[in-house]
Image 1 (cartoon, rainbow, N blue to C red):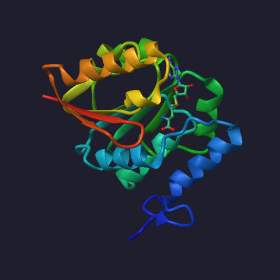
Image 2 (cartoon, helix red, strand yellow):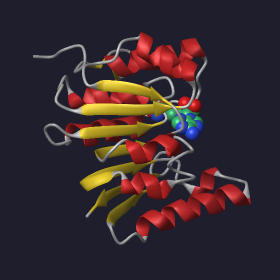
Image 3 (spheres, protein in one colour):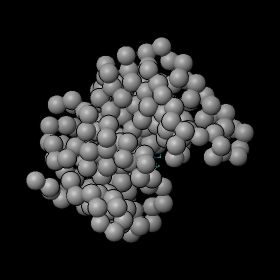
Length: 197
Ligand SMILES: C[S@@+](CC[C@H](N)C(=O)[O-])C[C@H]1O[C@@H](n2cnc3c(N)ncnc32)[C@H](O)[C@@H]1O
């Protein structure tokens, strides 16, 4: 039977929980929420998380990524989901809207918190910390067979040479890492999916 979390239609063509998160983003003036293609892949990967597994998002924003994870989990409460956000006001807005069982938004610098969070079956690295800097900490937080999703990896999106170099460094770190099996997807903002061997 469909629940509110499962509902995937409506005027926007988005799951209801995602539409609600986009409304929240608008109401707090947050303009960096993830696009539907990344969100759908995040939902799909969330649906594959093992029973009793753990999911980590770096950079909560207004909670759009969390909403896609919630949609992907389809009401499961056996999975622990942690999202880390630097901005206290954003974290508070997401918490105020009500988090599903097993979901937790923590305030802090992702790079500083990463080492103490344990390992995860799925990580969405969507903050500067743990992606542009400290990527090794994120990789170290992958459980065996854990999946890492990174977006904004299309170098064509960047005009500054420094930014292009940084993207190139991230791509090479992930594609050349012996402990990872990695695929680059030239869609949307440029996605990379890596799985820990
Ligand atoms: C692209 S947005 C996240 C969007 C969100 N994941 C989504 O799916 O809609 C990046 C977020 O990272 C947060 N951020 C920036 N620096 C951070 C840090 N050092 N630690 C944790 N979060 C950080 C920003 O405040 C911002 O909310």
